[in-house]
Image (cartoon, rainbow, N blue to C red; front, side):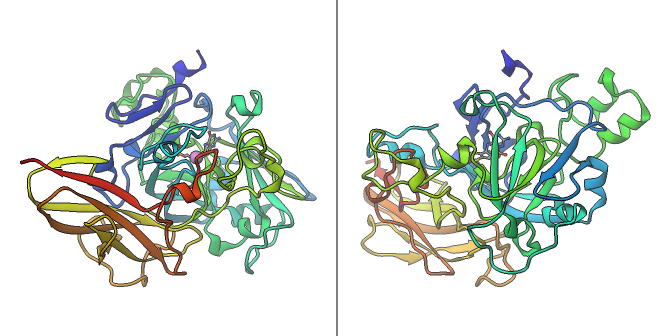
Length: 419
Ligand code: MTE
Ligand code: MO
């Protein structure tokens, strides 16, 4: 099949769908580091992973409502100032499995790990667009008006074999403060670039033995840091603070368009409907494509049901909000939500805790931690508050929607004491 050229993945990932490949790490692996290792970063594909073997020919064509359309080669993009942005990417379908327990929903099942936090590096989209004569923008993004559309080179069945597409408002794309990137690096790693040669061989071993990489040029190229194929090699868009669906991987072209992209993933998917809408009465045109994700948190150190001895339990998880809204606090309850106490939170790989939103990575999650003495069976709950005061809904029922997106209800896990 088209999928036999897909890259190799870490055997410990929990696979929700094989073709296309959709997988997430175990909860405990997810919350064990502030920066999610590339191999444990969730993978959400809608088709086979495309192959880009000749990086010299690869270019991104920018056209649409501009006077001088232009193709940008990788060397042009790498010549632009390089920025690193720590940003959390979250699939709108994160925690969908829990939502489907209320009432059936349509979509890939995900536990709490369709999310990850990485250091993305690349050129600013605003700088790339300036090369084709589009000026920068510094005011707040209006929702109407022109959009910038990203078109991929992959093929997905939802687009009838066409490419994956999405768009964002022009003013967000051209606002340097929005930190939208054309990213070619993730966590400063050396990606596995070629579909040929021994799959997943370790760098630099692969560089020396892969028969297609014998020239000095290619050995040097092999030492260059790149994205992994699963995450968009050679170039992807990163739209911080926005649902993952808008961060288009394997970028092929960029179009400046008069209004938002009319593709499947903008118009017939990733929209939030009220609980009353079902597959018989749905009218897709009544809702806007989801952009920012809402306030979210989940506990990763515990499973849904935990059988433990009486004693200390570590409650560790992530909290994040969209649009660059930082996390104000995380509340934890060990009596099913009757009483609460505040968890400590951190944005470092180590245990240096931040006291407030200052100096924080605004697009990135915080990890929170609390310890509790548990002597009888109970429910542990976590909920977060962002700096705008937004809170999470208490129950999943009130936000149930037929596509099963944006489950941000209080995260609950059960402790059963062994006696
Ligand atoms: N871009 C392309 N070209 N094809 C895709 O299937 N999936 C989107 C987005 N960009 C997708 C894509 C979705 S729904 C998500 S959540 C993120 O990529 C996942 O990115 P990741 O696989 O790097 O975690
Ligand atoms: Mo997604």
